[in-house]
Length: 333
Length: 262
Image 1 (cartoon, rainbow over the protein chains, first blue to last red):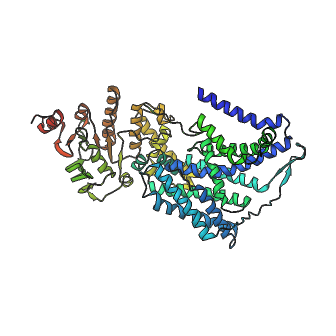
Image 2: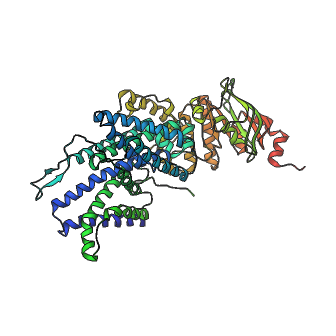
Image 3: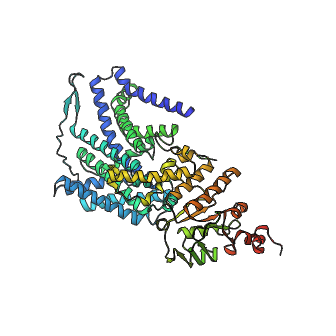
């Protein structure tokens, strides 16, 4: 099929771009692996935010613009509450806050707008975004706050025997990756193996039919927004610990958009793999493409990291509109 | 017709149901009942209010006037979810299956109300949850056998041909073990062979499980063959109610279907 061929070409180009620096000797193996790992770690964070998008889209068909704001809000809650109590207590409290938020959003926004056009719901979540952003500042303040996970920040040198000069990695990055992996496994179990997961998938497919077999729509929405809230919390804490809790988190969260386009709006594995591809892609582009741009065209060379993800997503949209793992729609005509 | 079956008491009683959408009066003062174990058909030309009637029973619409009594008690305005809890299941005119899921998972959703294990017990596959899942899987397998869709268990429903999708829709409703089963045009768009199969399944359900069935159908031949009693709607009003033989001889019904010169 033509589509498949295009996809193969796209992947071949990406792969070629990935290993080019290594083959052409533009970088040492150790440095290349370091950049790769750095990209993967950043990708995990994108994946976490994208996961929140996918959860809500899967279960309610709503594209939740507010996911980024929820990440910031959760991170702010943890950071500020951790000043007065142990971190674990602050995290538990923050989970409770996110669940309450889910209840409020369901009651005040989703329920009155049930059966409206998707675009109406999208606008509604835009409103929710600005509300949560502002409300977070009202309650918790607008400075830069820190979250201390108690993991040493200094990088560790590993594999010195394999690569010349070894590879530097951060312990907190490794912890973040492990947390993300655990979360993904739990979510996959939940969706595939529990009756609530089945109910969530049912609601995603057909509201009316789901209700007719006795699935309570409102409760399902509260559950799924709570889940998205918890995912946002994990993303917010990991991110906040790395970069500090600040407003820019909710902006960076927009990187999850190209991730879900790439991975497919309805796929949890898609969100993960999409995040990793984008994370690695933009780091590689920034580190290895920028110098070429500077040398060949006498450009300034910076900022590739900012647009690379979106261009990549655009390419995927052209070749594979439903994303790598999205549900294929087979319509009978 | 289930030879020698006994029709029981009234399970569903609708009195003076009126429903309008803005200026459109979909149902006007319609009164009828449904008895236990019977196959009750609602027929009528397009736009007669058949689907509206079914949706009133199912709790999708709430009539402005009239009362609905179910299992001997007057029912307040329920929503679809509550109706399901009370044992009312339905199929849809335009198949409303969960397209992304397999046949098996679709039918399993029909067991949702009956599954009691907590979220964590299920997620971590505790023995109690495991046992429950197996029990319900068994019930689902029976439905699958009954409707002869064994070969398609793992197929995503979107890939099945139309007639089979209709059957899965029925299977999901049956998995709920409903007291009252509502079928919205179960044979619509089917070929003769598929229609015959579906007729057989409906009669078998009625016969073997004793399920009370209310169905809407366009195909008059089918309706007359499988129903115990028929109600005829025209422009939202009831114009006939009785056994198939009585309906055949009813002049108002003949006029409604064939047209009449005034």
